[in-house]
Figure: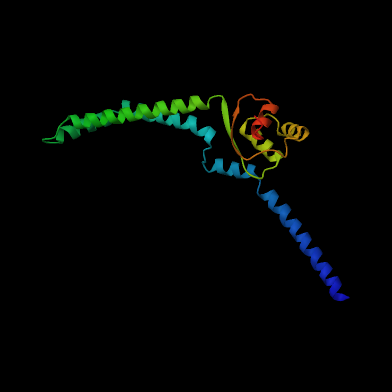
Length: 184
């Protein structure tokens, strides 16, 4: 009889412990905290990266153009080189400038392609409430609670597919729901 009560107590203890661990794990691993910590440590997200990179490249190009030290260094190198062709540094400068211009064009084309759309990643196994919250954090929707209610009411809540999506700016709930459930 004593072993019967012991086993029941052990089983209840294991169940209670498992529940406590699950609750503690969920509250400590919220994505919002992780994203906040990542930003504090200096992580740049793709949405922010295109504008920052473009500004940095333009700033570097302007510094190269305006920096008299780089011009004097090139002329000093060409003067100090005895018996070498002075066209070599000029050709290298032209190639570097062409490369810089090409990269500027690529950045402009990439940002023009992304203009008006936000890239959003739905990870595998997320609940509709989590997707709605992350969309609100990304600035795609205004209210996560309303969007989640819409998804559940219309039956989209269980059909959300993982993947990377391009969401147009100002899209309504129906359009977003069809995009993330791949019903286009």
